[in-house]
Image 1 (cartoon, rainbow, N blue to C red):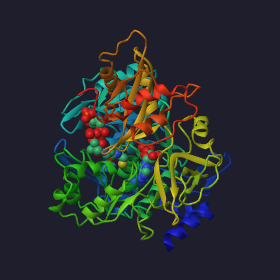
Image 2: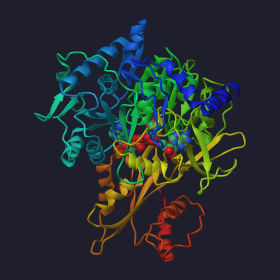
Image 3: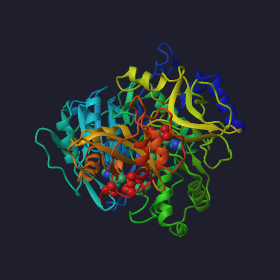
Image 4: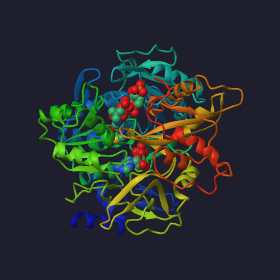
Length: 631
Ligand code: COA
Ligand code: AMP
C-alpha cells in the first residue's frame, strides 16, 4: 500500500503542499501563490489568487503542444447510426466558433447558459464554449420534464438556452420543444435567446424572435479566444436532487476542478494522454461532466460520447462493440447498466466474439455496486472492477481504488479506500467516530479537497444548512455505511429521502409535490423500494379528498409525474389508500413504509399515532412493487 498510503497521509498532513504540487499539471495564466483560503470558513476556496481558462487546458493547450491531430472525441450513436471523430484541433475550432456565436448573442463572463441537450457533440462543444468565455453552463438532463427545467431556469437565470430539438431513445424520439415551451411559460425568468440544434428526427418549430438555429448562430461568427478567469469563478452549475422539491445548484469552480480532475484521471483512473476513456453515462449527470467531458480532455486522452443504451441499441452486446471498435482502454458505467446487460445475456455470449484486449479497467459508480454484479463483470471481462463512490457535490471519487497510485486489492461491496484529500469519517448521531464494523453517517472533515462544491448557487445559507450544520466541521454526505478493519469503506445507501433509480438521483420530495398538486389528493407519500434491475424504484401512495372516488386518478398521477419531472422518474405505480401511517406529531412514517415494502422486519416506532392505519397498508406495501398502475 506504499504509494497510496503515502499520498493519502500527505494530503491529510499537508493539504496545501499536496494540492500545490498537483496544480503544476495545469497551465495557469496566473499561477497560484496561495493555495487555500480559509478566511470565510467553513466556506473554503482553493487557489484564491490564481487565474486560468478551463477550455484552454482542455483543448488549446494540447493543440499548442503539437497534438492537434490526436482524436479528442468519438461520437458513437447507435440510435442515429452515426460514428464521428473530432481531433483536438477540430474540437478547438468548433468550440471557438460557438463561443463566438454565444458572444454575438450577448453572452459574457459570468452569464449563465442553460443546456437542455441530448448526447451529441454540440453539447460538449457548448459546454467548452461557455468555459472559453468565462460563462457558466448549467446542463439539464434530457430525461427531465418541464417542471424540473423551469426550476433550473428560474434559479440559474440564463441569458441563453441551448437545446437540441429532440433526444433519441431506443425506439422512440423525444421532442424537446413541448418541454422547453412549457418550462418557459411556467418560469418567471426569460432568456434572451434559445439556440436550437435541429436534428432531422424531430426539428423544432422555431419561435420567431426567441429561437435561432445552431447553424444560423454560428454562421459568420468570429471565433473567440480563451478568457482568463479567476480560479474561484464558477465553471458550471449542476442541479441535483435534495430532499425537497427544489433542486440544489451545485457550483463548480474553475481552478480546483481542473486540478482535481486532472489529478484523479491519472491517480485513480490510471488514464493518461492518448488513452481512450469511455464513460457510458450522460452529460446531464456529474459523471458525464467530469469523466465524459472535462477530465479526459484536460488529460489529453480520447473520450467516447455514446448516444445509446446498454441494451436495445441494438442489443446487450453494444458495450462490447464500442470497446472493440474504439479500442477503449478504460470504461466507466453504472452497475444498473451491467445488470441490464446481464439480464439479457447472462453468459456473456455477446462479449465472447469481441476483441476486448484494449480494455484494462472497468469503473462502476452511481449507486451501490452489489457483489453479484461485481463478480459477474470481473469474470466476464477479466479486468479489475473498480467501484468508486461520489456525488454531484464532490465532482470526483470520495472513495476508490486508486489504480494509478497503487495495486491494492478490491473487495466486493466496497469502493475501497478514501481518496487523497477526503477525510472520511463514520459517525454516530452525536458525531463520534464509530469503530470498524459499525454503521453510521458518513461525513467528510472540512475542508473538502479541490473540485468539490464551494457552495450552492447564490445560496451560501442553504449550503451551510444542508451540508455543514448536522456535524459542525464536517460535510454531511447523506450516505450511511461503515469501515472494515482494513480501512475499506462500505457505502450502504442514503440516510435521507433521496433515491437512486437506475443510477439516476431523484427526490421523492419533488414527486410528492407533483402528486400533492393534483386536485383530488389530500396527502401523499413517495418512497423508494428495492428493485432487482434499477436498484430502487419510486412508489406513490395517496389519500384522496372527500368527494373524490379515485377512478382513473392513479393513472393521472403517474402521467403527471412523467410530464412534470420526466420519464426518468420511473414512477409507474401509485396506490390510492385509506390513510398514511404517522407519528403523533403528524410526520409520515416513510422509513417504516419502506422497510415493509422491502420485506424487512423493522420495529414499528413507539411514536406511531394509529397502528391500525399501518396494518391496513401492509398488504398494499407488500404487493409486487413493479406492477404498474398503468400499462
Ligand atoms: N431523455 C429522454 N428520456 C429518457 C432519457 C433521456 N436522456 N433517459 C431515460 N429516459 C426515459 C427512458 O426512455 C424511459 O422511458 P419509458 O418509461 O418510456 O420507457 C424512462 O426515462 C426511464 O428510463 P430508465 O430508468 O433509464 O430505464 P430504461 O428501462 O429505459 O433503461 C437502463 C434501464 C438500466 C438500461 C438504463 O437506466 C441505464 O442505462 N442506466 C445507466 C444510467 C447511468 O449511466 N447513470 C449515470 C451514472 S454513472
Ligand atoms: P449523484 O449525485 O447523482 O452522483 O448521486 C450520488 C449518490 O449516489 C450518493 O450519495 C450515493 O447514495 C450513490 N452512489 C454513487 N456512487 C456510489 C457507490 N459507488 N456506492 C454506493 N452508492 C453510490
